[in-house]
Image 1 (cartoon, rainbow, N blue to C red):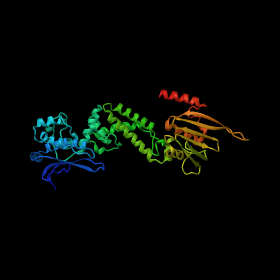
Image 2 (image 1 turned 90 degrees about the vertical axis):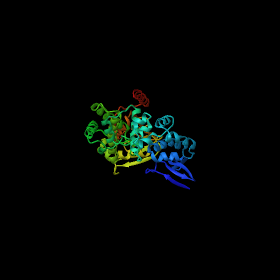
Image 3 (image 1 turned 180 degrees about the vertical axis):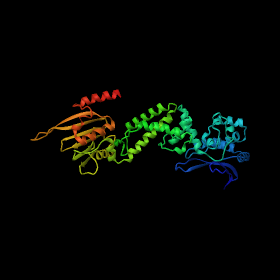
Image 4 (image 1 turned 45 degrees about the vertical axis):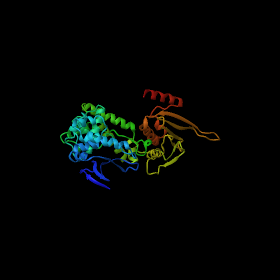
Length: 418
């Protein structure tokens, strides 16, 4: 038989119950293997109940001290009742000085006290009783999040000023740095909002005209990591130059905002529109049919009558098929006797042309030339150029080498320089 003897308005603060004639403190903490909340109880005395009834601060301090014992019980272990009972007199019946001393020896849940109004500065100095003078039954989880975020920043040497804080609140990254940034002007003190907007405008002006293209190797919605890095560096340099007093977190959140918005614009465009933005105007003006293959012998045909551009179809093929063990893709124009082979694993490419057609039992002869490629942006330019004008159109793009050994030497020089 279980009866509730004392409870507070907040359902999470531990209750006092009477179970089979014995007073116990009951609290929920943690979860079991099925993610259901766990409930723990341990015996208390009438003197402890009297303090719990009258003194919210001591009640919360006891809760804070018991929670680590509940965490130690895990998903299926038993609460160490002896350790829990040993906390009762030092926390509920001792002088404030003795309580402070006890908290210097035990583990306790700082966040629980902060959520219920504890003075953070006094907590940091070990004056837990004084810190709880303004304690409230109501819990403020956001206050705990702010405290933890600021502690993480302090550990990295980041101390926020008013403008830094306002910028992080504007992007929604004040509490969680990993959150995708967004524009939330209502979260900013109106007096600081104009200054925040000047910082944002600095980054927008610096990034005007820049874009983050697609990278099908990273999935159908994948975008170019190098484009991201270029835009981020541009935004950060501009903001640091115009506003040198900002901390790294504030500068970083502005560049993150610029890049994430650019990515959203790219992902919102159909592939054909994205190709237009990349410069593939006119699409397949010359080619009438192409064959796409990968390193796993998959093949896809494109005909001029197809409603989508050849480049859009090819990059979709790459997005569907690319994997760590499938990084070589080919575009072939059988009618013209030419093609290109993309080596994504090495940032290089080969163009193949027919030097002499086969006939009379003789095999055809091919000329193979190689070139290094500057990331996915370079690949996209080369693919677009080939689709528009064949291998001849690639002359102006890169330095073409007739020997694979020359390519390997050039690759080593590039890698050592990078």
